[in-house]
Amino acid sequence: MDSCDTPESTPRQSASSRLKDYFIGATPLQKRLESVRRQTSFVPTPPRRKIPQCSQLQEDVDPQKVAFLLHKQWTLYSLTPLYKFSYTNLKEYSKLLSAFIAAEKQKGRAVEVGEDFDIKVIFSTLLGMKGTQRDPEAFLVQILSKSQLPSENREGKVLWTGWFCCIFGDSLLETVSEDFTCLPLFLANGAETNTALIGTWFQKTFDCYFSPLAINAYNLSWMAAMWTACKMDHYMATTEFLWSVPCSPQSLDISYAVHPEDAKALWDSVHTTPGEVTQEEVDLFMDCLYSHFHRHFKIHLSATRLVRVSTSVASAHTDGKIKILCHKYLIGVLAYLTELAIFQIE
Image (cartoon, rainbow, N blue to C red; front, side):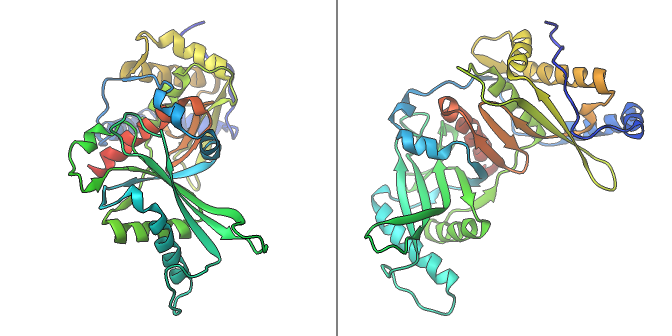
């Protein structure tokens, strides 16, 4: 197989002759875009990274909790260290946060901690969800609706979920005192109004700060390469890329789907460093995809913006959305996201 030869692909929207002419004759535009990309400040990327592997520590994780975290779309945030956070006070935090949410949703009516509300907040640890023993323990926060059924302790559906973690976070852990707990990566699933309430409570209680974590095209390319490099027992999804085309009056999306085994064959043809991924390999992998697409559709993808990658390991969108699909590489995916979160904090 030729190193730059990939299977047939189809744009999500047919490219008209006008659109083709626009890209084919857009050499000055491409040069300007490339100039902007080079001048944009990216995450300082090491020249090489290890291909994600299954962490031994992950064996301690509750399989039911892992299954609960998979196949959901999470919104990413970076989080500064928590001041005076204590894992021994999780039950107390549950009561305090429940009262805070109830008070915020019932403005004008006083509420007391311990009062019976129509929602319940639960804090719980995610044992083993870490890269090294030094990483703080990850924990999960859930908002559940109270069941109207008479049976005691019967809980309703999960309304909102968020979890905090730190995977291989040595670069941040080395810079803070013992009064702070470093969990730089926060993932949320549920209504944004609830995310905002939880964020406000954490900021007031632990003097921390949340910030949305976007993923630029540069890091999406790294994700595509690293996840394609992962060995899979079986593939669950097509390898897909989505590019956004800067045109008026509205943007155009181009979808590029590749059979996962063909994507892996392409990666193997450009990969020369066992167990690792290098910047040169990432660039060559993406250049081969660009070259193949241009050969078939006469469109220069290098003049567009990569906004989403999807593989059997995970899918990620530039607006900070992630969906993890494979439990085997859960720690590996979180490690890279932790790296991005730490850079944003620093």
